[in-house]
Every structure is written in C-alpha cells, then in structure tokens.
Length: 192
Image 1 (cartoon, rainbow, N blue to C red):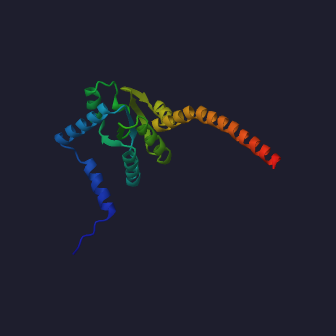
Image 2 (spheres, helix red, strand yellow):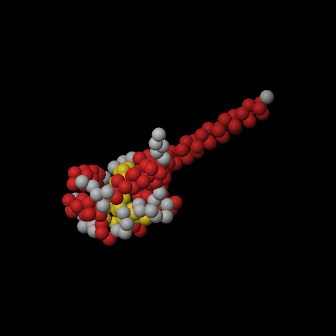
Image 3 (cartoon, one colour):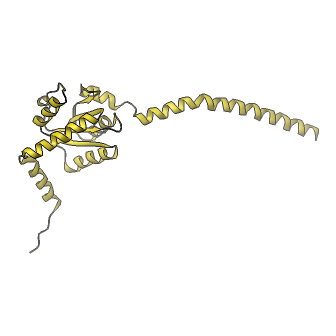
C-alpha cells in the first residue's frame, strides 16, 4: 500500500506546526532574527496576514525575495520583546490578528511598496504601521510612503533632469550646423 501526499496534506501540516506551541529555543531564535533584522533595516512594515491563502502568502514571500526584503511572522508577545530590546515605544497588542513583519535593507521603500501593492489585491492583508527612521508610523503614513517613487526611479528622474539642458544645448548647436550645411548646399546648387 502506497501513500500519496497531496498539497492539502502539506497545507494542513504547516497549519498544525504554526498552531503547536514553540519551544523556548525557537522563540529565542525568532526574537534574535527579528531583532537583528529590525536593527539593520531602515524600514519595516507590520501587516495582518491572517486570512491569506497559501498561494497569497507564497506570493507575498516571492515579492519580498525579489526586492531583497524578508518576511517574518511572530506572535505579538515576541514582537513586544523585540520592541523592548530595541527601545521602540510600540504596543503590538493593539494590532488585530497575526502580525507579519516585512523588512529589507536594500531599499527603504520596498517593504511599504510590496505590502501596499499586494494589499490592493489581497483583502485580508492590512497594514498596521511600520518603523521608519527608528520611529513607529501609522498605516496612513506607510501608504503615503508606498506611493512615492523608489530610489532608482528618483535617481533616473535626477539623471533625466540633469541631462535635459545638455541635450537641449547639443540640439541647438546641431541645428546651427544643419542650417549652415543647408545654406552651403543651396549656394552650391545655385552655382551649378
């Protein structure tokens, strides 16, 4: 007799693993990872992940990986320990549901953009707030940051703005040369 494992088995198994109590060592590891991640990052976003399907949670993780961000789910009591250790005046018990922390060190705006963009498609994903510049900000502030252009987009706009006067000058100078060439061609044709 062979046993066939379906995708639903793995979903149930992971659901059971998250329901089962974690050991003290696992909790310490989660607090350590989250503390290190929040120390190194300039920005983090806290969002409700409960109600997401497995496919939606995978999409969130893929989007984060693509942008160089990380997702870590921790109980509110563990988040409270992290906030106390980092001396942030945040009370995670005010957050409704489970809390997913999205943080990244590459681009400060990436966590906000990822969560805000996906929250439009995924109704259960709601932003609670975030940490920016070492201070807690509310959900509206995070959403406002999410619509701002990224660092790469801003640098591209800056280069375009700096390049515009130079390309305009080059076109003006080239226009004078084109005019001179056309006048000389007209004189040449008139003599022939």
